[in-house]
Image (cartoon, rainbow, N blue to C red; front, side, top):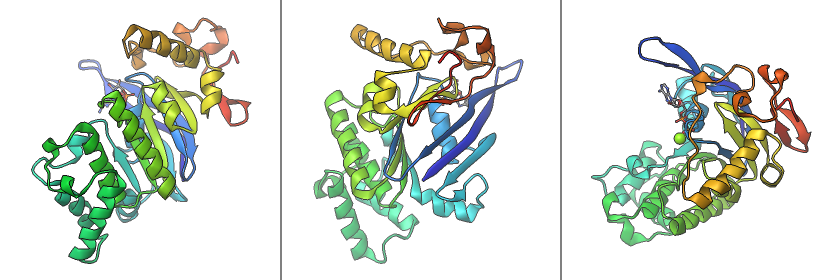
Length: 308
Ligand SMILES: Nc1ncnc2c1ncn2[C@@H]1O[C@H](COP(=O)(O)OP(=O)(O)O)[C@@H](O)[C@H]1O
Ligand SMILES: [Mg+2]
């Protein structure tokens, strides 16, 4: 469904002395129809940037992106418009996706009209009712404004709006991190239900390992703009091979117990050109000054580390 090859994104940083920063650095992965690839990494490692580049909301600096067999890095505006409805994104702050002055009904209808999904008003109405039930809400919610709904309900509406476009690929960028834990679980389950019903592929982004593990078939671990490990959920979590993944797993539990949910983020522009985890790694040796490529360590399981 999705194939990403050697993707890079360079931003310029610094006020007085401008210098380029590789926020996304040589990232490759694939996602099959109906599959969830979880993307986990600390705040600032480049997850949201990757999400936006993959959907071409911002242009990449290098590399290629394929949706099915179309290279979207080369697609013309007309092709891109057609593909765009099939690839959707859902953000951490769902309220920004809805017009605050529009009733939910109209927000849902608006999306369908833009894409000419329904043929007439009756068909439109029927579709809206179908959608709102699909995401576990009811008619009564359609007459409300966004501020009259809870965070979880808004995220459901946003999902309904996206589903009206019949997407085949959804990028979910920390979609539940603003929600209470109990609500979070319900919304995550809804994401799964919807996926099974429509065979949608997800790129599911979170800094929370538990969330990613619950949602994903495979996990990609990102550090300073690079994927350092990628593989089936259980292999990566139970048997992490990259020192950074181990640190992340350990730190996750340590921090969770201490009530803090974030590790201080590394400054991407101050890291070495070889293995970026080198300055922090207990296993590092001279060879780590060279950039490691992902290499296979087990079926479907790849690690970018010289010491493995
Ligand atoms: N438009 C931009 N210009 C310059 N730097 C940016 C821009 N957008 C993001 N960054 C930088 O890219 C890095 C990754 O950000 P982001 O993708 O939001 O990370 P994450 O989602 O993992 O927290 C950060 O250091 C951020 O400051
Ligand atoms: Mg982010």
